[in-house]
Length: 476
Image 1 (cartoon, helix red, strand yellow):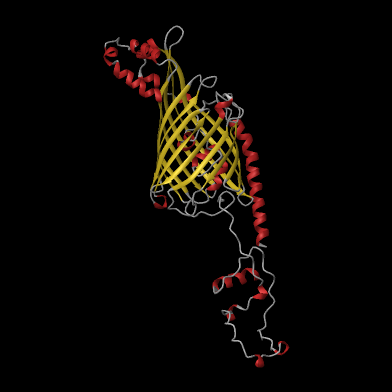
Image 2 (cartoon, helix red, strand yellow):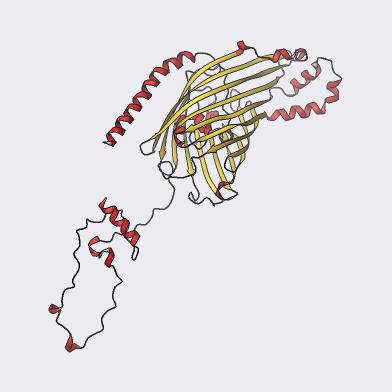
C-alpha cells in the first residue's frame, strides 16, 4: 500500500514538473529576446583546471555549468558573499610603465595627450583592467538551489590604430539570479537537473581617441538607466555516474538567452574521474584527486582547439579531519596553461589564487589575454559529513574475498555449540565394541533450515553476535 502511494506521488510530481516546464519555456523564450553582452563564468576551481567544471561536482560553481549537480546537495549548503578580483597581467606592466615615465608625463600637456599616445603605442592590442565580483550568495537543500551573483568590470584595450591611437573601454555591471533543481534516479546512476536564470546587465563598450582621453570628465563613465538590459535563459544538464567514480556529463546552457557574441545555446560534453585516496580515513595526507576533459560550446564560433578543456586537481590534508586542506590545480585551456593554488581552513573558509589565459583572436595563438584571479568565500556545507557509498561514490578497491558458506545442517544450535572433545583413550582389544553395537549419538531436534545464500558470510566460531545476524538474514 505504501509503495503504491509513493509511486502515485512520484508520478504526480513528475507531471507537475513537466507541466511547469511546458508553460515556462514559451514565456522564457519570449522574454529572453533581448541582446546582452557575453560575460564568461569565472570560478577558482574551474578556471584553474583548464576551464572545466560541468563534468564534476562538489561545489556550487559546478551547478552554474551543469544544473544536474544540484542533486548532490541533499543537506544544507549555504555560501555567503566573499570577494573576487580578476586582474589582467598587463595591468601591472602599465603601472610599472607609468612609474618609470612619471616625470615625462607630468611635464606633458594638461590633457595628457602625450601620455595617452605613448601608452597606446607601447601596449598595442593589450588588455589592462580589473573585474570585481561578489561570489555566490547561494542556498541549497534537497536538490533545490538559489544562487545570486554580482559582477563589476572596468577593462581597457590599447590600440595603435591606422591614423591615430585609441583606447577601447569596456565597463559595466551584471546581476544574475538563478533557481535550479536536480535529482538522482536509477540508484544514483543518473542525475538530471534544470534551472532558470534572470540577468540584469548594464554594460558599455566605447572607443576613445588618444587626444580625447584627457578631456573626458567623470560624467562620461556614469551609466544611465537606459543602459540596463534584461534577459532570461534556461539551463539543462544530465550526468551518468559510472562505477569507479566516473562521470559522463552533458549540458545545454543559455537557452533563449541571446548575446551579441552568440545567439545559440551552449552545448557541452565532458568526462571526469574522481580518485579517492583512503576514502574512509580522514587522516590521510593525500586527499581526493580529480581529472576532467571537456569540449564546450559545441556550436560556438571560437577555434576548435580553444573549446577543448583539460584539467586536474590534487588535495593535501595538512591537518587531521580536513581542518586545513591545500589544493593544487592545473590544466590546459585551449592549449594554454592554467594553474591554481588554494586552501580551505576550518572546513568553511576558502582562499584561492588562479592564473589562466583566454584566446581572444580569430585563430589560436593570435591574441591571448592572461589574467590573475584572487578569490575568497565562506561556505557551510553539511553534505560531506557522512559519506555513503553510492553509484557515484564507488571506491577502486580490490574485491573482498568471501568465505565459502558453511552448510547450515552441519552446525549444531547456537546454544549447544562447544569445542570438539578430545579423542577417547584407546581401549584394550578385548573390550572394544563391535561397530554395529555402538550407540548412535542423540542430537536434539532441529528445525529445517533453508540452504545458505551464496552472498551470506559464514558465521564465526564462538561469536554469538555473528550467529544471530546470520539467522536474521535467513528468516527475514
